[in-house]
Length: 404
Image (tube, rainbow, N blue to C red; front, side, top):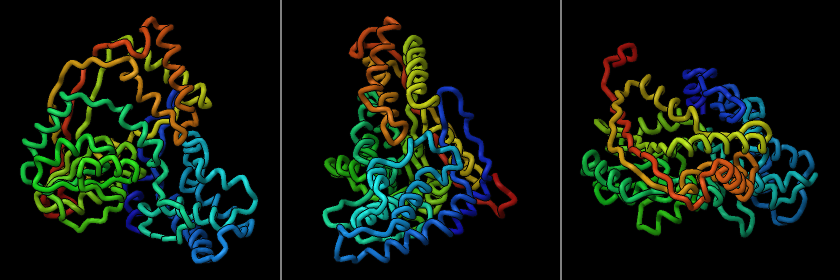
C-alpha cells in the first residue's frame, strides 16, 4: 500500500488535468493524502464490520446504526474520494446498488455484507488489501464502480467497429506481435482480442467487468477477471502488453503503469492502440450542442472520466525511462449512421456518470439533430477514421539520474 501512495506522491498531487468548463467536469486523479486516509482510517473501520458479520447466522438481523453509517460513508469515500477532490458531480452520488441501503437507518446483515463487498471491489486494486467478506446467500460477485452490466450493455454500441478497423488490428498483430506472449489490458467485449489472439504466440486478457468477460469467453478467449492496477501475474510474464482505450476507465493509471513495467519481460514492449474519428463538420457542431444540453441537464457540467488518463500514463512511462514512438497505422474514409456518430454521448450519460437516463439522452440527440437539419438517427453521414499505435520500449540505464 505504501508503494501506491509513494507513486502518487512522486507524480505530484497537483497533477494537471484539463480544466472544467461549462460542458465538462473532469475526474481528477487520486491524491496521496486521500489514498492514505483510505488505508489508515476508512479501510480498518470497514474491516471490523466485515469480521463481525462475515459468519452471521441471521442475515436479516439489523446491524447497529453507527455501523450502517460507517459502511455508507466508506462507500462514499471510495466512490467520491472523500468528496473533496471534486468528484461528486462526476458520479452523482452513491451507485444504485449501495444507495438503496443508505435509505435505512439500520441495514440488515445481508445489506451490510453487500456494501462491504462493493467497497472491497473498488478499494482492493488501490490498497492491495482484500477484505474477502462472506458473501450473503444468493449474492453474486462484485465489480468495480464503472464495470457493471450497464457498461457492458452500452459498450459495443458506443464503439462501432468496421471490418476496415479489424483489418488494421490484424495487420498490427502480424507486424508487431509475432510469436509474443501477449497480455491485453481491459479486454472489454473482445473486439481487439478477436483480431490479435490468432496471431500471437499466446494471448491472455485481463478485464474488471464480469459481464464483459462473459462476452469474450464466448469466443474462446483466455480472459482473467482482475484489475490492471493489481494484476495476478508474475514479473516478466509477457513479451508484449497491449491496451486499446481501456486506460480511460482506469481509476489510477499510474498504478497500471507500474504493473505494466513489472509484468513485461526483458526486451518487452507496451503498445497502446487508439481509434481516431472525425465526422463531417456539421456533426461535430451537433456533438458540441448535445454535450452542452446534457451539461445543463446534469447540473451545469457533463461528467467526463477519460480526459487526462492517457496523458497521465504517458508522462509516467517517460519518466520511468520508456522510449515512445507514435506510429500511424492507417487512415480511411468511413460512413456511419448519425446514431453511430453520436452513440458515445448517449452512453456517457449512464447513471455511473451523470444520472441522465439513456432515453433522455437519446431524445436530446433526436431533437437537436432535427433542429440542425441533419435528419434522423438512421441518416448516414461520411467521416474519416484512423488507427494510431503508441509503442513504449523500456531502455536500460546505468542509474536513475541518466534517463534516456
